[in-house]
Image 1: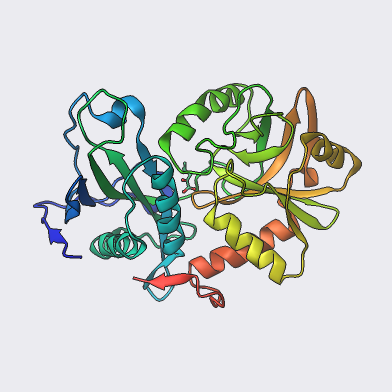
Image 2 (image 1 turned 90 degrees about the vertical axis):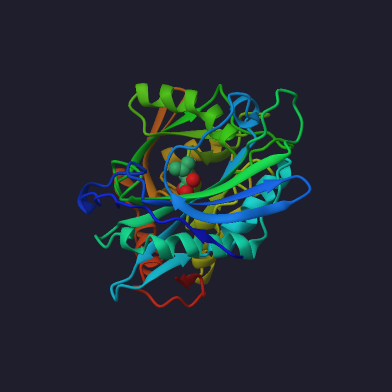
Length: 353
Ligand code: COI
């Protein structure tokens, strides 16, 4: 793919790496690619990160024809930069776009675009422990028209932001509220996609949880409100009596890259991992009878986020005395070790930029 480069006159000052937070500072440039009916993808360019002009009738602003991805670039101790399984994000975006009737960007073009923008922005990849460059590719309809239909023009953009921990808690356990009224996804819907609409629908639950002092919401299945599915921005795994349980990928749960990686590692470590439905009643029971040994969320932004407390309809369980579990910690150390290049990558998951 030919990529035009538009140089910026003045580069921004880089933020303090010790206080990055998440998604607050944008880098100097963005990658942009257009799609038009009858032409396909065209005009790849890396241009200064700046506001974009949209017609107020733009389809995305009304009907949310938008999908996104999230991945990170990590700076190794030797100064080199690497990505983690970018092809998984490319494939997931293809699935998301197919569901939302949006053009699919071929895997090679997606990965090439990510590599190109990270190469331009390499000075923005931080080196402080636990920091990385978060990469946010997204596709959205740009056509100005109020009829509900598949749009005839789209943009694929990648923006980048240097980040620290997603949660203020960092790797410390978070408190999770089980949502028993609102639902996030049903089979046949868009739950498996990474589309903005899923997140918009989740904000009310999140606000209510925060008002009660919880960090995140645990969503139950949308039909019976009985089986645990995922947490606001993460997949979730539970260790019960020595085995791991997580919701199956059956159309309602996001196919997390971190989820997949953790399942691989756990199986290689000899743990039984069940991708099967787990009812909230069984989970709370395990919390009370002491067999719920560990619980943690997984996601690119959050990596591994231990769950210290679960609250459901007035009932509360504390997990592992509100401490990070032994396996959770080992997983965190090993996975982040691969991502930051401290551990040998025996899976071939990392890609040097
Ligand atoms: C990620 O983990 O990359 C995500 O996309 C979560 C995000 C909504 C912050």
